[in-house]
Every structure is written in structure tokens, then in C-alpha cells.
Image (cartoon, rainbow, N blue to C red; front, side, top):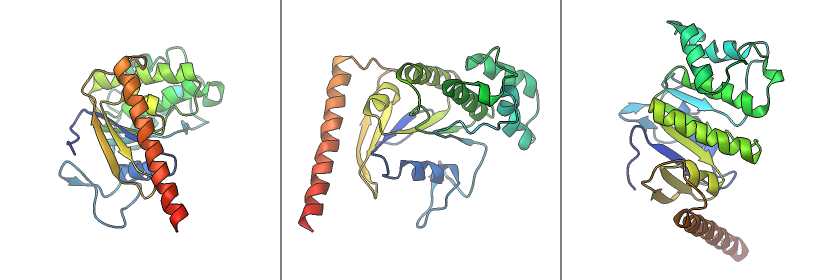
Length: 232
């Protein structure tokens, strides 16, 4: 399998329940593997670190803090306060939150709240951004727009992104490289290096054909699993 390099945008694609979130929690350092070790470059992961930031399915903002205060919270917690006010303003502008600085989380739409979560994760300049289906609860238009915004930020800030999803369309739109997982217990079934610019037009003939191919792979996997179950 080809390697995953610094600055790549990796999408991990698999069915619900196959272990995608567990993988992210291992990379984030929230979970300890029962066997073996997890490394990024030559460094073994032994716990959470500000060089790796995780964006969850739900924004998980602190309701008693404003947008501006939520974005700054992690930096204040670890004492990273140099020019913090200016940095917060920079990310507020970059993520499209201008005018909402003093808003409370309960006054925001889900899409706006997820923008705050993205800004909060990126302000510490993580080397690796982990994303656990961050747009799955959004409507189609908001989801598509935030996918584009995320790719724009990735191009500007040059972090490594590891994005998990069960949506084939989402994987093909934003993934430079796609890792396809089997059902639980997950193993790598396929590694696809698309080697083309993102975000992509899903109406492109080659992308539409690849989408159909991936769908057929999943259907074939389900069929084999069902045959094993029926044969027991």
C-alpha cells in the first residue's frame, strides 16, 4: 500500500460500525491499542497532543462561551496565548464567522457551529487534523459548501487531514487518497490514489465511474459476508 505523507488529504471510507471512529481515537491518543503501537512518523502516540486535533460529528461547543471565546479556549488551556486575539480574528475571518464573534453557541445554526469547531481545531496549527464525519448531520447545500471550505483551508494551512466518512460521494469529492475498509473487524480492502486536485466535480465521467466501482465493491463485500453468515 502506498504511504501516507505529510500534507496529504486522506479519506477513510467504510460502513457504519466498522471502526472508523475507533481509528481516529487511536490516532488522537484518546484510546490505547490492545495490541501493538500507533506511530506518526517515528513518534509513538502515548496520549493526546496539540499537534493532533479531532473534529467530532457534533460541534461540542461550550455553551457558556461566545464564538470568539470557544475558538480561543484550547489555546488558553495550554498557555498558547501569544498574539491570541489577533489569531482568533484571523480564523474567524478565514472560516466565515465575521459578525458572529460574540454570539452564543445556542444562537447558531449547526453549520455555523461546526465552523466554530473547525476554527477552534485549526488555531493551534495542528500537524494532523482528524475529522469524524463532521458534516454528516448537515443539509446537502451546507455540507457541500463546508467541504469546499475545508479543502480551501487545507490548501492554505498545509496540515495532514484524515477524514472518515461512510459517504462514497464525499470521499470522492475531497479525498486525495481513499482507504476503503472492510466491515468489522476492519481491515484495508483497497487504497485509491486519485492524484488529482480537490474538491472534485462529482459529475465528472471518471469520478462517476469510480463511484459506481466503489459501490460495487461494497455490495460484493456485503454479499460475501451474507454467504458466510448463511453458511454457518
